[in-house]
Length: 285
Image (cartoon, rainbow, N blue to C red):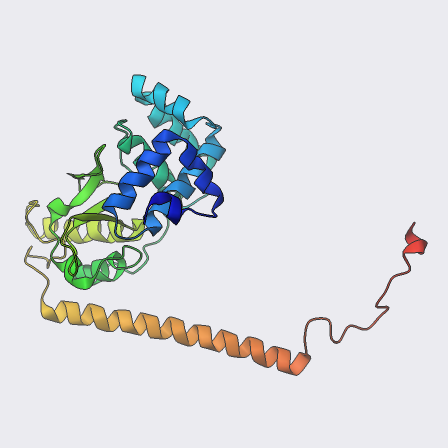
């Protein structure tokens, strides 16, 4: 599916009129298995364009190519415009601009921008670090478990101008290069959420504390000694995932039932309204 099909009927699809945005969307459509990354990137780029006042993206790109600090300052201005947002929210909203700059030849830094600190998505416990990475890395990335477990540290990082991976464990957004478990075995890219990135860095810190050196060939999902995740840890992650899904499902069902019970008891909105149903507008003219 090409970029125009993915963005059909969406307001941000108008940005494809900019050659640089068309290039970004085309590369993502070729490299990503999940079309959602095209929508996410273009939509967040549209937010960047609106909030920084850079309505002419081609003009900004021309300036940034001549002086890269222009791009860095534009990202800083964007983060300032998002004052009050959490660091994870800023990360998600800045994603499109960072990808757009990189894919069009401007080497901006892929590091977190300023934002309010937010608590981790899951408590960080050293014994469960690998389990937490598995749970969070599967959310939103479109990765299958088998694909995730085959990854190494050298498979995550930022992107170059052609959408190929530059290994960098601290990149934000954190891109992942993988080979599909099924179908055509062509290298693809996806992205981990900010929460998954943080969990991964915390997991690696536990390995460093335990005396392990980080190596590009080291498994991405690893135990504290740097070895691959065991079947037991994977099984525990699956159990926890099922438990979280069941809890969320039960909560949703309970809310729906409570809403239904309320309307069955009290009737539709306005059904117990007592008072004049029509106002004499002449009294207010």
